[in-house]
Image (cartoon, rainbow, N blue to C red; front, side, top):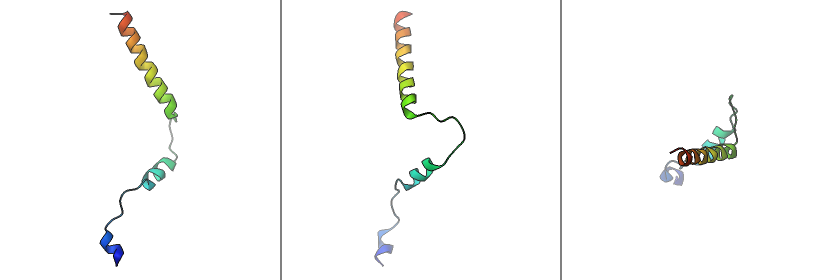
Length: 53
C-alpha cells in the first residue's frame, strides 16, 4: 500500500545507459578528439583574425 502513495519513480540514469549501450552504424569519435579539435579550430580562427585584419 505504501507503493501507491509514493507516485511514479523519478527518471534515473538507467535510460541513458541503455541508450549508450546500443551499437549504431556511423563514425565513432572519442569525446577527447572532439574537444581538442574544437579548441584548435577556435585558436586557429583567433590567430587568423589577428594576423589578417
